[in-house]
Image 1: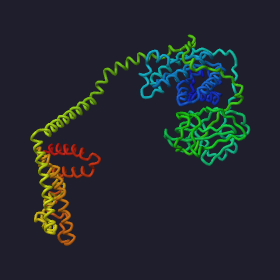
Image 2: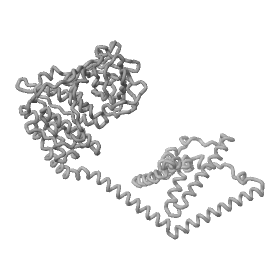
Image 3: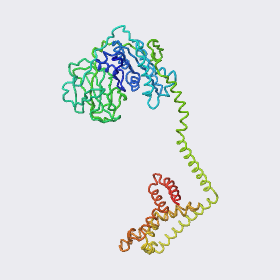
Image 4: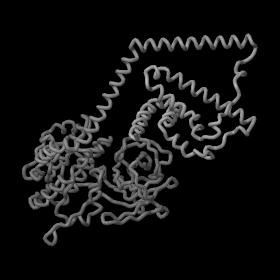
Length: 566
């Protein structure tokens, strides 16, 4: 709107909403619109997105026809933008092409001005490059320059030439307070800021609303929903409502807590039985919604529905809509007259791409250098581990090693023979040899030294065996048997000690902190020997979770740590 030598701008757009919301905004802000000189509008992204989620193409086309006729009747300068969008499969490419072709067709039919960025991007092969992580929104800098170019050229936009005053239904906006009987029982929240001033009415699980008879025979085209009554901010919250009349029942799901305009796909005429209520039984949706498919059954985490506005129309039966062959339209070559084509205002995006490519060619190696260094270091470690693996495999298959394995097998065989002989002897003597084992002996060192006590701990014994036997290949081979023996013997000795003190409590050894060398004993617990034993004991407990693999790397780390300490 011109004034004082400048321009006053109003942003009436609402993200993720289709063409019908644009018409709703025109009616909602009629006092602003009647004094406007220019309208800049875009619908292709969200109309495509509704089509993508399964919304009826016929209804999308009908709503767009409503919008175009309403804009034409305003007799102001209208500029349509077809924004670029990258989609990633053939089915979506076909849907996007139909939507953009529909817009071109109607822009030409109603003499609107057009900037077709999608066509520019396709011709210059730019869509993939600028899709980034958010294909639905172009880079802000590009849109800023485009906006500056539009402002500088507003005076050159062409006025719509009205060949006739297009007939349309009578559109009506009604609040829940106006459209329902007895709305005073509904909880309400009033929100006002620099952009909006709205009252949200809460429909919970206990509420069932009946439509006022004054609105009978009106068609509900869409509803403004805002689930912001409880202040939650979560994209993945779901709510749902049901509206029904004598002949139709519509189940509509709502995702998130943004203020959205939800177009209805099904025809719904208000009659004497029409009502609205919360979807208490979580029935499947009967039609798509913003970001939701048909037949979707949500986890209804928001147990209410926030109603803001209803968008209605009467005399729908008299509205004539041109029948369109959408498949043929997708292949039609539509040329916008030169005087209405403002593609020359598109920034030099191809040049931007060249600059970005050149910058990345220079800077990518610098930015990636630290990461590449890490990759090289990991590859070097992996190569070293593979070499150790190959060396160990070679040693295992060598003749000396095979000889050692055979000797161990012979030793196990001899041990088993001796066990059988012991059992035979026990049977012949009629007693158990375990009864002849010596009684518990507690050494003087254990009585006088905490360090000696620590040396008796299982962790220290295991760590000592690990260190001693890791010095030779034979040691590695016999290590499992030795470690198993140490653990068995330790538990045997521990049981003897527990049995002894049960019979004679005076034999119980004092706590470690009572010894004069307690601090030295604590230092012993921090040595490599003790910590290796503890790590092996932990591996034994978690063998089913890869405990021994973790022990391998932990032992390497401990050896490196203590080597560094000198």
